[in-house]
Length: 143
Image (cartoon, rainbow, N blue to C red; front, side, top):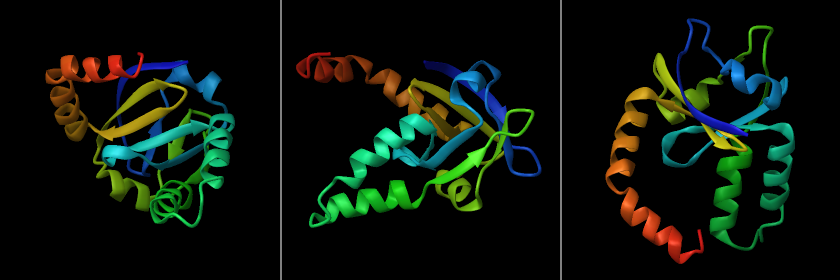
């Protein structure tokens, strides 16, 4: 299970270290792709297979399903952690998420998200202000 926020920096070779507490569980090979809200999502291979299988079953006759699958599947890249637990972030993904030097890696149970620190701070503050109304909506869904 991945939880918590971790501040990291992108080095001069465009690598970022996966937090050490996540490395054993995430494995040596992972998949990184575009996420919602201008962040990147990192999946262990098994979690990626589950998601990719679901996306592959979406009806290709529905335009929104095709668009979503293209963004998530087409934007995905399988990468390996080096000996120090770092990954290389492809330029197109770095640009999509607007990543600068400082990033935040958040653990979201079965996946990680990588955010530009400034974007994360803005997003988090807004979500924290709206947490009560968010909780009410989730309550309607049985959570």
